[in-house]
Length: 401
Image 1 (spheres, rainbow, N blue to C red):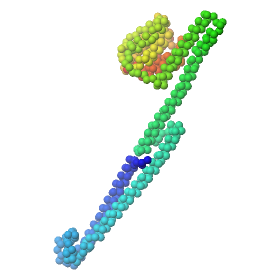
Image 2 (tube, one colour):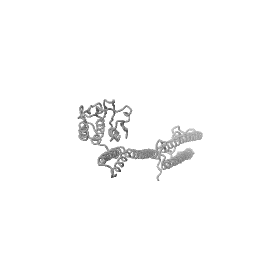
Image 3 (cartoon, rainbow, N blue to C red):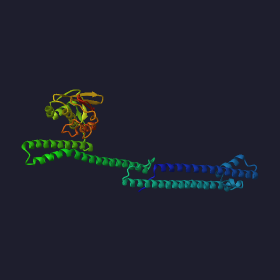
Image 4 (cartoon, helix red, strand yellow):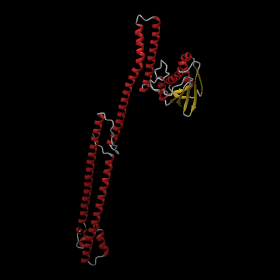
């Protein structure tokens, strides 16, 4: 795999290059000053020698000799018994040699520094790769509780962060799988426990029906009871299936425009026969046409379970009142009956799955209110209950608008 320089290494190399350039510049400046001083000394010595030999030489000509010897020509040098080597050569050659040495020194400094930085970076990368390998081995062994130390930058840092994100997702998936497995076990235990009683009763009734000694009236009674027990099992399985779909996420609740009037009409259609048989009337009013989003089928199911619970504990000739009121971001719907109320000891548990209050009916499976609460809360709503013994019960449902 191609080895790429990371940002930090590039910055370090840039700093090293700047330091090398400064060192070279300083050395070059020192050399220039040194060789300028040497050249000035040589020219002064030559000038003194010329004056000693030719005291009458004009000052302008001497300055020309010192300042601009290349333009004087060979005749000028012969005139005063000099050569071009007396004025030029050694300082220039030394300056070139010194500059070359300074440049090579700066280049060598940069090369050694760059090599050291590269080796340091390679070693660091190797250590990081080793840490990632050990981390992946631990994750592969099922240890999702590890956390990679965050790095400031670099290829391995980005990879580490992504691996940590994946580890978090794996841990969440493992936790979800464990919870689902535990929930499935509880579901199987609950279903087994809840079905055992009505199923046992049905089996006993069927055995009695098979007995030739059973008379006709007893047979008819046993048939009715067997049918009732089978209805309980069917209702239980249907409710459990609905709850299982909600909790497993296999169904998606829609968000269609709803009103309290629409839900109440659906409930009246669904529970009309039950209400008539029990002699219970429905009254409703308030902000019935105030819209809110929700799943019409599931919210109808939830409200039906609440109204059904009220109807089953209301005396004949009583009224169940449904009142809608827009309050802030919620549409608040109260469902109030005139029934026997809920015992104080049972009140905190009425929404628990499979909980049966002391006054629960023979066909109750203790799941209707739990299903209602699950559906309502799944769409950001809430449901509460207040009750007074022998004076009635009030359920309050809040639908998020």
